[in-house]
Length: 106
Image (cartoon, rainbow, N blue to C red; front, side, top):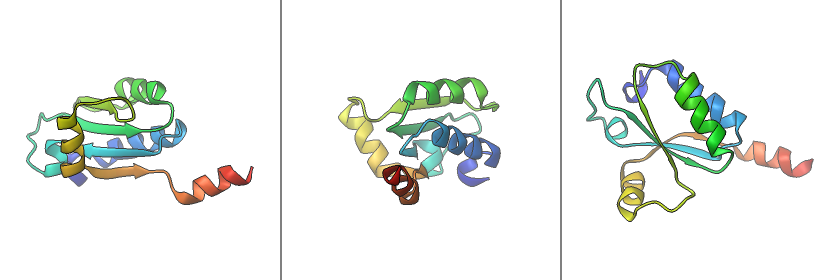
């Protein structure tokens, strides 16, 4: 279990990120730092794509006892939050360059 998050949950996050053309998902907060408790939420920052659809699928379709705090990082966020994401953040999904190349050829 990476970052104390069930593998199934990480796979669901990646699947929804791909489905909604998300460019990058960064885990931050206590789970990224490794100082989480059993009840700590999953903090993720999301870049690009269809954020609203991604957000609702994460909230409604990812079956977990853990709660999610999902931040649309492309929108204005506090400087404090930006610094936390930069300091502690771990990329858990990133659209590959290959995907970009395929899109550009079409």
